[in-house]
Length: 314
Image (cartoon, rainbow, N blue to C red; front, side, top):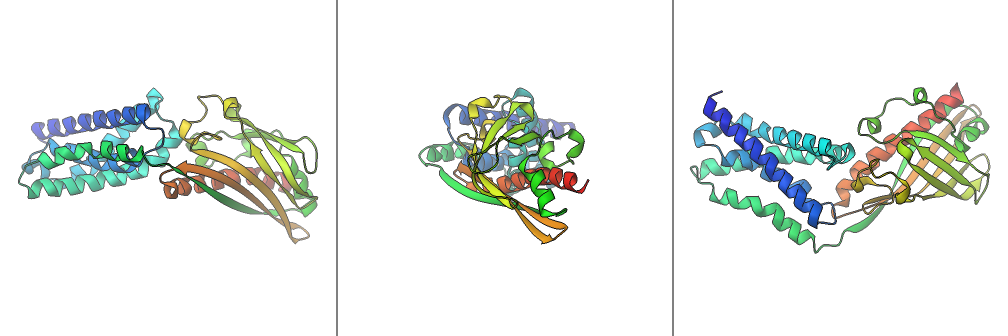
């Protein structure tokens, strides 16, 4: 690679990271909600920034300009992670729009600059687009979306045996938990779930790693077959460094509301356990939030059901 072209790409990379940091600081300081402008508009502009610093001759090598937004994104995310501006969970959730839209932006802006014979005035003006969208979003009230995730597992065990393991899931050891995606992104592992008394009005005391504690208040009870519960989480009881603000249980953007266990006997020796969880997301793009919340909660359900299954079949 020619020295001049390498310098141009390095300038584009540095400028892209600086621009992304500026937008992030603005969102953090002035915007109370997770933002479309930040997650879906800014990545396209990041794809434009390396183009702005390149000549038409340099733009003929299009592959670099499709991949350079990835370098900007990954560098920016790394800085966010080590400085504590964003947690791993949030970064994983938004990485796909950044990579895909960044590449799309690089492709579009490259074509525009080549067609305009090197003139980039309109492209420079597009740097203001995320700020414009942020201004519009500040006047839009986010909506509450209520959704339910259902996960099932077949267990080699009688209904009565499974029932005893479902009511209380005490003292979960690390070697009982298989690796899941939720562990990679930093979701704390469950440690114990203990019921203080059986029947309606009972409370299951739940403890996760990193000091997370909450209660499941039993509201329906069918002996030997299942129960449902309301989930009571006090956000103040969760250490501030445990979960990012955007995924804090009981927070502005996300909460878990209720859940249930249902045990069905498929045969005298085989049972089907169904775990459900109803949750809330509050954003201006609940359709995207739901995709990730469904996936993460289902994966976490599999962690819990895996422990129950192993204990029943042991």
